[in-house]
Image (cartoon, rainbow, N blue to C red; front, side):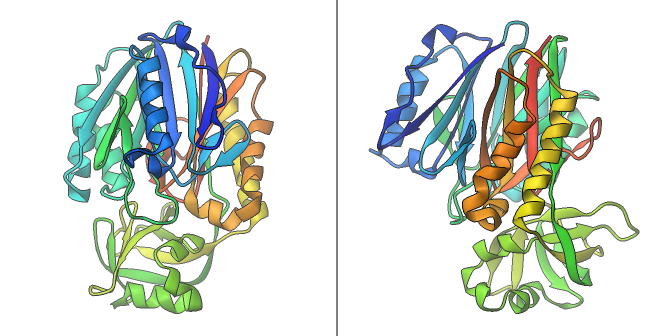
Length: 383
């Protein structure tokens, strides 16, 4: 694999010339960008069109973000790009539109059916971040994909605005859309890691009414009212303020907890919409973290990913971290990105974004799930 990174910022233009000699059917171009890319007449829109013209034969994908990651930097309103040309790995792109969150399970099935299965090793998923339920989307993929295929990726972001997200399907930004890149071949090596760094606090509450990813009641009381009580003065900043206090949920009868982040609130219904399923009858508890815990968790995710992935030679690390982590980290955000690179081997490229949800197995060899408030790292390399 050969790879090269470059960035665009309206004030500085492109950081390097396009490596057009790398264009081809075995080349992956990932572009993560601020939401302004879809605004007519912006420099970002023009820059994305330039990128598409430079790589007409490559498989291109990307999405809007809550912050763009490239090497050890985090930027806003820019475009972070990696161009990776594989020597022994085939690529295939598949995409589908989303009719809404209720279409998520079927959308996962459609994507899995559209990707050829023979030789498939890994699937990178990038989804609209607002009009989707990430849990059944991932479940739909797993139901129809061959056993052992590693599914990673994330949900597009829109800063802390939660207004509109898009994914890049080829050169075209599309709302209410999901795009996947399938990677094929016996010489592809895939490493992955996922860690959160959050801990529970406060009382456990029973989820007495929930439908899919919408939470209506905790302990028989309106969920939004209880959440506002805990947030206090910060409740005026919902839904963004909820990123500081995600919800840990687990099914009745035990099992591991999953972290869920609020995407939207409904004042009339007194409900909250999350990025993934909320189990009816399960248990919910608020969570919080510190900067040190978050940075340490990023290091653990990277150590797991690089332990499973490439130890030498050219490789590519794709990181997807949650917007809520960025809000907690503040000016120390780049320290969690640096913690990932500290574990990377030489000649490892690094690109990623801050998201509204992360997709990764929790453990090596496990099934993928929709996470919130985690740092996920995917490492691609060839033997």
